[in-house]
Length: 153
Image (tube, rainbow, N blue to C red):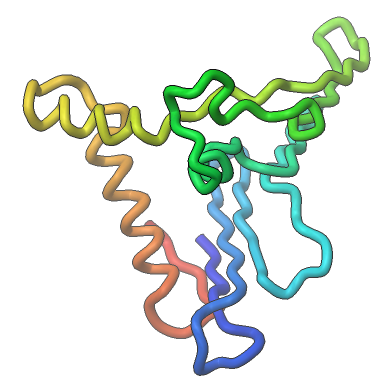
């Protein structure tokens, strides 16, 4: 993993920039953000051997909640077509295909309901303990010590 987490504006303030790269056997994942950009990044940019996917924003749950619109409300969290993801790829027959991908409706509450069910009723977890611990380890190492740095898990 490669980490670069820092405050660009003022080193004594909270971090305002990060770039994290995760290296796997056959692909690389790059996470990056900064408060010092004029135009926002795409929230999701995925490139593969036969195509690409881009999306400007995450789902709209937080936006709706801030407006007082609750999850029980019809249409809660629905994206407009302008917010859908865009996919362009070459099919197995060699045809170039471009299409918009509607955003699935998210439900953060489902995660908390699942944690409760796992603790109280021993139901399966949506995210297993090893996955949680790996994410925690990645985040902890990103914010410890000097940056930039490269570490191995």
